[in-house]
Image (cartoon, rainbow, N blue to C red; front, side, top):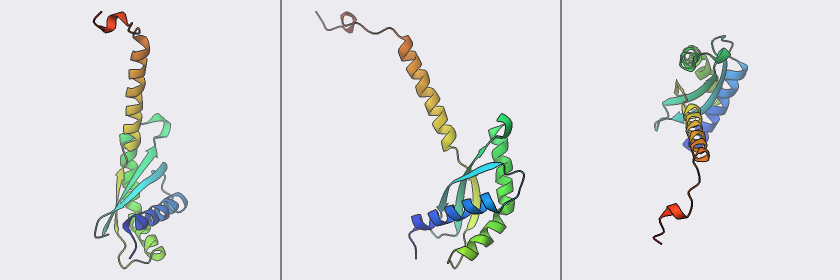
Length: 133
């Protein structure tokens, strides 16, 4: 029995390779699998993905198209995993958009706005600091 983290890494690597080399679905676009998390009983694998929107399109719509395309390919991907992994039962694959990249970009934007506000604010002098003299 393998440690769950190592098995997750193996599934992630195999799925990423299969998606990039074997799937031929025009709705997939440029998809990257970011993580795989197995349920405690290893019956379900949550597969997280990001996708580069085409021509600056709507990210939510692109995520939906990609999720459907990956869902259609789940049977094929699962059968390919079964041939490559030594497991009694191959986990059911469920796909979810990974929002961590968007959250990180949002935080970076907020931090740059704070830095701009600090730069625009005049520096406090020692006399205004209220040292009581």
